[in-house]
Image (cartoon, rainbow, N blue to C red):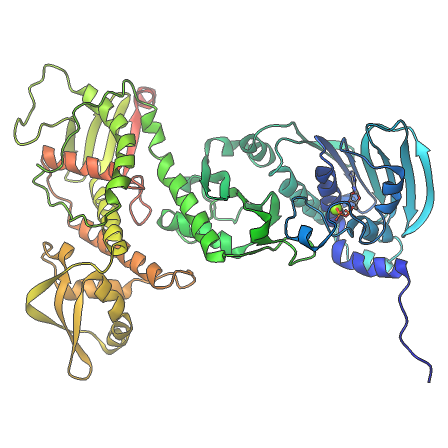
Length: 588
Ligand code: ADP
Ligand code: MG
């Protein structure tokens, strides 16, 4: 028997490789656009016809190629971007495998014109199905133009898998956006079937997003920007109120490369947390920058999946950047009201007769001071509203600095310079309690207050089972639960924070056992405690539809604006709204 194994001819190898790289016209578009960016282009034109099936062209004003490089660029594993294994771990370009042009040329009719700015003449190359047809000098502008015609003309079996022109065009548009968004400084033009579909002049990220998606986004986007050590994130996310039912095209980029990452997607969602119900989706465009050594982009042929050296760290980083952005934005419309930020007589809470939850976390002070400085500006404006000759309405113990009024035991109106601030009393309490609970939980197990009479927990059997699983977590919250007999339990202490609420202790436990944590969260037990903190806070606040005197109103407003996220309660309901004089005037 003769030996059976033989090496495949090069064109066939390229055709097989093309199956991985060139899945559809959109993949060609992606590879060519990435090459233009790698070549340092500032202007890129993409033209497609018939969903890219018959014609695609990318022209750029990048560095161009020498005649030899032009020919070499179509060889498999020919690249100018890496030289050795070390380079593989420090990739700064979009491409590096040196497969794209060879693969594309194997399954289409390709024509390239390229010239380096320093050369007088450029190079014209025609390759059909991997075979060189011509190579000659030609006059052409500096940069590179590549035309790809009749995709899969030589592999009819694959051609059959192409979808309708519209579908293929949709895929092309998606790739185009994924490349145009992280490169707003580059001009992109897109011509589809002889019509200019997009003209995107060089601009900034936000304008690029708005131009590609929806003009309405202009007013719905809030900035994200965070930098810690060697990791940075920036981008734009939509306001919670702009979230949509239909999942929008959100995008994540790592070192300017689009990546698919359900994990990071989850991090963003998690950060919106209570601000959004489960069926609503925010839109986000986030660019993560991280040293190439800390991320592996080489795990997938089209490089859409990445691996980080420390996934959890990145998760927390993304979530906290988004949370921070959401917390920040809400104050800015108020701060715009600011006049003269001269805050010489800070109001003290100590004299407030109102129950102040104990503060225990050591870092709380720093946090509230930084938050406070935002609020001080708003606050200053409120003070300005009190007519100078007014005697303080309540001279002792603490002067009332803001003119407030309570309505129906539910709303507090405060006069601000450019309008009116309306605080929803219960939602504001819930936000304050929630953040207080969280602070205490972060500082360690919460303090517990012994009950004078241990309270038997009278729960149905299924709840008892759940309770047994949750006992360690409940202890962290300050619920002292001890077994009594084989399958019953007694409550010997409750969180000190709850001691002033005269509610039946069993009802707290039932409330907590009924709260469903987000089981997908990588934070496990923390997610459960967070969910519990929300439930408790909302429950505690539900008893707060009560009359508040001027000091108590003041306390509430002060504390609310010291919160990290004063705009929403832990269920995502607004804590306050502002009406500007302008908008009030318009009502009349
Ligand atoms: P890779 O991008 O992975 O290096 P490609 O097959 O996409 O592989 O390209 C091969 C080489 O051809 C690149 O490394 C680059 O040197 C050159 N090249 C491709 N497109 C362009 C272009 N538009 N401008 C300048 N050089 C290019
Ligand atoms: Mg490439």
